[in-house]
Amino acid sequence: MRFLHIEFLYFMLPPLVILFAFLLTQKESQATFFSDEVMQKLRVSANSLTLQARNGLFFLVGLLVIIALAGPVMDYAEVEVKQKSSNILLALDISDSMLAKDIYPTRLEAAKKKALAFLKKEKNERIGVIAFAQNSYLVSPLSFDHSAVAFLLQDLHTNSITEKGTNFLSMLEVVNNSTKDKQKYVVLFSDGGDKKDFSREISYAKEHNIVVFVLAVATKKGAPIRLANGEFIKQNGQIIVTKLNSAIVSLATQTGGAYIQSVASLKDVDALLGEIKKRVKQKQLQSEKIKQYFPLFYYPLGLALFIFLLATSSMSKRQSVEVPSAFLLFALLFGSTQNAQALSFLGFKQLQEAKEAYAKGEYNYAAQVYKEYAQDNHSKEAYFDAANSFYKAKKYDKALQMYEMARFNTKDKEALRYANMGNAYVKKGTKKDLLEAIQKYETSLKLKKDAEVQKNLEAVKKALEQKKKDQKQKQQDKKNQQQKQQKNNKDSKEQKKNQQNKKSQNSQGDKNKKQENKKDSQNKKNEQNKKDAQKQNAQQKQQQQKKQQDKAQNAHAKKAKPKQEQKQLQNQAFTQAKKMSDMEQKKWLKELQKKSSSYIYRLNSKPIQKGLDNEKPW
Image (cartoon, rainbow, N blue to C red):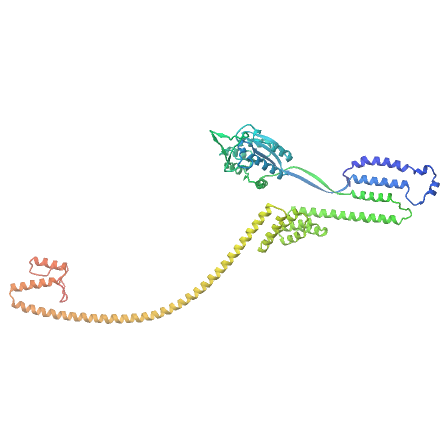
């Protein structure tokens, strides 16, 4: 056991001892006038507490109160607390182009509001401020005192620096010189200036491990720059319209940072914080070991109150029965308190074990410990922690049961509980569970607006719609498959029937074809026989005519003279030539013009063969 404030013992006990030393030696005022024998006779009752006894009790009360003030405790554990943080510099562009009013009220004022919102939301980081135009200056060094940083930030104006222009390289040099960290982070609030090539700045940032996050405070449409005297900035007699320089995207992306376009709300700041948490590595600043203890001050304090009651009462010495009963009441009262504290101490140990198991990823064990503690102590928080542990262990039904047991009285906690229940239903994944998840998310949003919960709600609605579409498509595919199957079956039956009909037709056709072929063959045979007979008859007739002609010629030749015979032969030749084709006639006449004695000529070198009687002479 030890005392948290032992100085109370050192400075309060000596005066108490001295004071009560005088009180204990002091006699009653009547004793100065009467003897002890007379005082005994004068007292109405001789069984009440004496002055010395009461003073002794008061002294004991004072002693116990001082001990309680000293803070007696019993150590039982030692916890190491580590503080982690990262250093982030805010760089604010205060060149004249930031006076443009394409963002209300001006770009500079909007950038300052975004930076102040960043300071308010990011509470655990050390933050500093840089102002730059043509040259750069450190406005506030890195500090956890965000209120002081915000105060310095609010007073920045374009006339804080007299130089004109926007020099990002000088700003990076100030960032590099402002911290000795290996990895440096800067959040740039600017319209991008008018530079198109950031290769030098990117090379410098990579060389010195500077990660740049850009929150672009300007619009692509742009606006003219109005000075404090109401005049617009001109160049060569023309009013300058400054616009967002999109080339600054390369400075953010190529150095490992992020580029975010400003909007009217603070969603851009939230997005910026999200990107920073993904990329910024926190370093340990300091660690401290803290002793955990079990307080004991209520024991001496409770005993002091009890003794004070005894000292101020008129309890009789003879009524010894009442004193033990009072001590019994005291024992029961403080004994029950002690038991309750002991149980509370054991409960703390349970919770500590559960937290350690949860941190190690032993979610089943942590959930069981939280559940047992919640059932023993009817703790809503323990039910909630048990539900989270079951959720991590992927036992979503048990998690939902624990969430139902953890019903809070505050809207924030209830909103978180409903949101977690929605997540559990989503993990189950059925259509019914998705509908339950939507209901839980909507209930959570009614209690407290939360962007993450809203995003989850929209995602679940889209998933449910997709699930409905998939199911509808599946039913349609099944229906189409059935129709196709029926059609295939029908086509198969028709095809089979057609094949049978075709087979039958083919069989009948083959039979008919055979008969037709047989009939055609017979007809052809009859026709051929008829042709042969006609041909034979024609040949016989020609032979008879030939014989008659030869006979007539021979008879006439015998009677005619040689000239007459020759003339007759020529006439006969001409008559025969009329029956020839043009080509045959030309050849025949050519032979006649040769005055040849013979009318026969050879068309080739082959020997002359004898033919039929009606055969042409060539």
